[in-house]
Amino acid sequence: MIDFDERERSETGGLSTADLATAGKRPKEEIQNVPVVAANAGSEDRDENEPLLSLDEAASLRRKWDEVQGGFVDEPRRSVQQADALVAAEMKRLAEMFADERAKLEAQWDRGDSVSTEDLRVALRRYRTFFNRLLSI
Image (cartoon, rainbow, N blue to C red; front, side, top):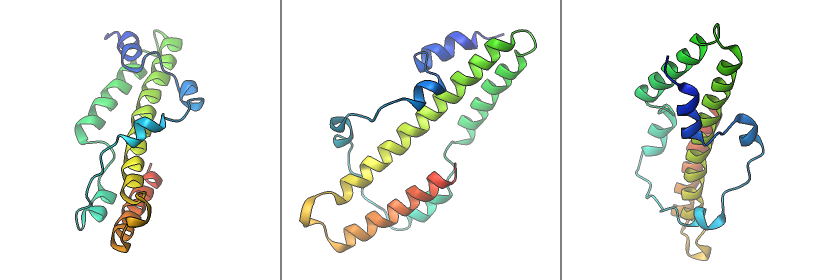
């Protein structure tokens, strides 16, 4: 059996779902340094339908979960700890992904009075896409 516990601890830094529940906000400097991505016509609708994880990522996570579940009979406590670490790592990754996307969106429209109505329209469409992806979780 793979030493899943050690691998997950190194990947997550010992992170648990409880840690995520009490985590603070990202520093403002980190958010401000996110590059602005130009919106492509029609990309918003396409993005709404894209899965959050690629097929390879989903398959990899499923294999990790199968390892965790398979170890339950021999070491139930360890399996539950591994399950918590796996869920925490994915929650953290999703939260970072959405935080980065939100920062990019904010950078699109938060330029003072020099923002055109068209830029604001595009920003609102991207927020809609972002919001719909959040709801898909």
